[in-house]
Length: 184
Image (cartoon, rainbow, N blue to C red; front, side, top):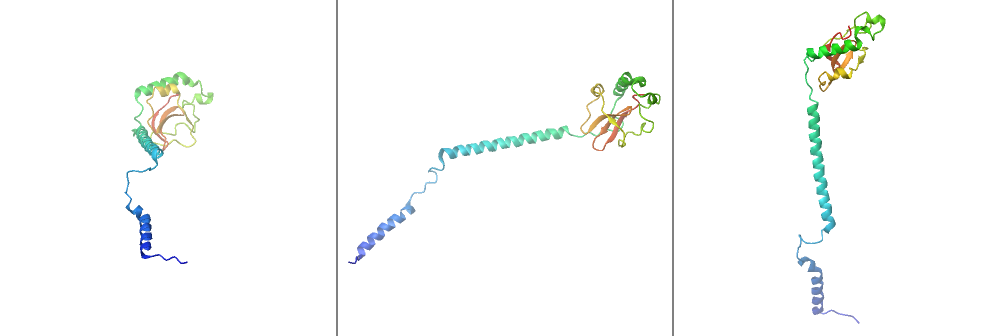
């Protein structure tokens, strides 16, 4: 028993096969419709946009903050020997004469030398425009004195060396101005 397909049957089988296999080709293209992730994809998209906005705001804030810091750090050029005025020099000398005057706080051998309680070998080896010499002890300035001086500009600091108040450029360790002879 052999089954033979007649020409009519063959055509019918081919037509059915073509209809089944070709149907997707004739389907309507719906680019704007469909599932596309649905509600979860929309939430994820909103979250990503919110995160991007937040990152952008953070970057802008950091940039503004950096600009403010740079503005504060603007280094003033101080003319050597012209930072302290006469009123400040008078107040500082008065403060030190009241607190340490007459050699009250110096050892007996140094009190009579009138060189600010400094040993003879270290007495005033510094001047305006020169770096702070090695081996010289640099002390902090008392708070009551600092309150009567203008704030030290960025990159500078106040210090006491021996019997003198100095303003030092920190980067080069350079003496910019001096109030001499506080202790005698």
